[in-house]
Image 1: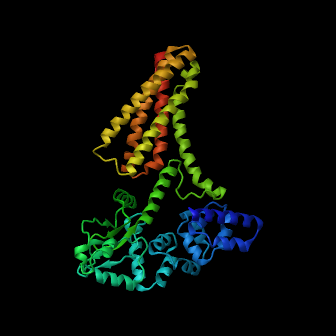
Image 2: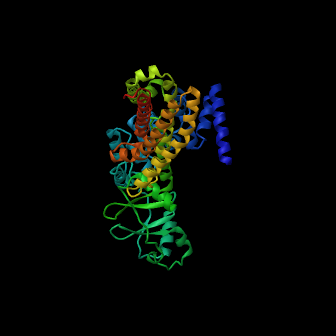
Image 3: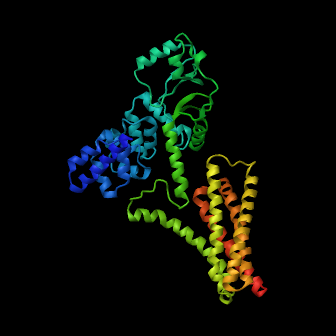
Length: 452
């Protein structure tokens, strides 16, 4: 808590120094802040001020800050650096962070970085780069401590003392055979509490399922959450140990997934720069607005089919938004719930039918409750029972369809290889608008004029 207060004081002091033009003071304060706070300050600053602050960072601080920046802003800084400057900047990064960074750089620069490393470190980095970024292999770190099962804990203790330090977030040593295949873990607590003459084989835990290197990072996050893990070994298809994943990397995945789910529903990227330039932001958002315009035109086309009905019964134009709005809200509730359940791995083939029937039932009951209220209100408002009946019937139909669509759309989109969080909202809005308007105006046409 005290460190947070100190950081806030530093941030306020930096803002005051920026306002007064005290360049030396800004540089001093900026390089005293934790890297995460500097990254937050950069992401909270307009582009011109952000570039100025970046140039004031020393190399060590700049290296640390890079790890906390979003991809879009980090890419802007890296593009302005020469290959030699990049090499200096990234030489102190952890291998998993360096691998993430290299995947954003030109191939030429990546090869230069690899050429500067010694053979052992080059092989470790290439092992990570050989896996896609969004897999366990791309997420892992190769900095692991391994031991053989036949040695004693006393030997392990002497080895650790000789080594001098251990990788961050190490809670276990990994036990491997002579082929480097994973066979178990040796908790640090057992090294400290068991007798020194105990062998690793006697002290290790073997009922541990390692994570396959090709597993998706979202599945990795679920495993860590479900089993409260701090770290986990990663193996290839032959069971050979290739690295380990730690909780700090998993937290990043969880945050990215949360950002993705939230922003995708508005057609935004999780790395969207809040303070980016007008034209950069315009380019990102214009496409999504164009897609939404097409869906709105589809709803308008349905309304146009019943233009004569609306001309003769003007009250319908007043009440139309109610049907579409209620369907949209009901569908969005279901859609959000199902997307979240899918992200948590709760939706399976054997329970999807129950989920669909449940949401159809909820839609029907909600429709009956609210339709009866709004139907009576509309009938009294316009002194016409038929208008109330049409509105009530259309609302029930739309809420049932909205519930079913909200439940099934995410599963259908995922099966088609489309991100449900990105496309689900647009498709659902189109369905509820089209169904709502067609049901309302179609029923009104039948009831008032006995023709479709």
